[in-house]
Image (cartoon, rainbow, N blue to C red; front, side, top):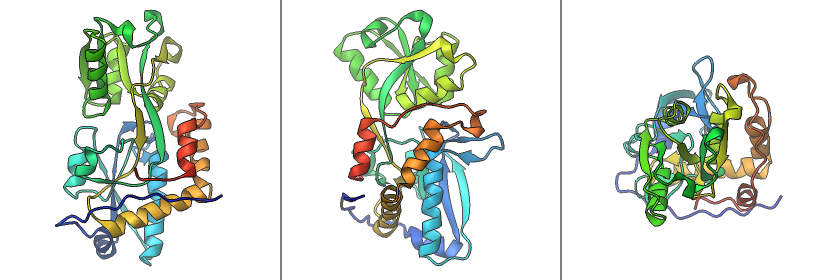
Length: 287
């Protein structure tokens, strides 16, 4: 398969941390993860971080180990939330953030992003009994989204444009946001569709919920990296490009989106790869 790698030129930061030297000296790489961003980054039954993005980061860590000729590379995991993940990366407390973070121009002012590995669309999950089909149906209703996510602004913009008079609530994490729909504190939960499919699949009564609405935004997910470390970013991007070129990315996709997931009681998301993601993998890019 032909592979065209489109990379932006990262501007070197004045005090950029030399991540590769730190890893070489400490023989340790620090991975930030999310506790409830299923199926990208979440805790399994043994309280171990697993998921699609975690698997991708573990492949990257192994490539770094080989490139640095280390006999052993330890992995330290630190949990992050949608609220503090960017601050933690900007402060140099982690080497990679392996969750479900959207690459945006605003965020690139503080952190760098690797090649995009997933593309989602922002929609909403609602109770079937409420018969909500699209955003205009939320007039005068309560809608929740997760604090610190890109869905907050897009949701507020949609409310202003259509004068829906929505009340916007914020959950601390995706589980809390969905719980508000379950207990009828909110009428809808707006978030990236793939995360909503995961929450629906793991709900006590999945048939009671449905994912609806026109896409508010397109969300390109990418691994967050420290700002301005060109050597480290180049190594990460080259490994992601190799994973795509060798077809390993499709095996990872099938594992987490098309097959039973043991870490979640063998539920299956049954999410075929979308057109935008398929096209993006033809021309991998970090923009």
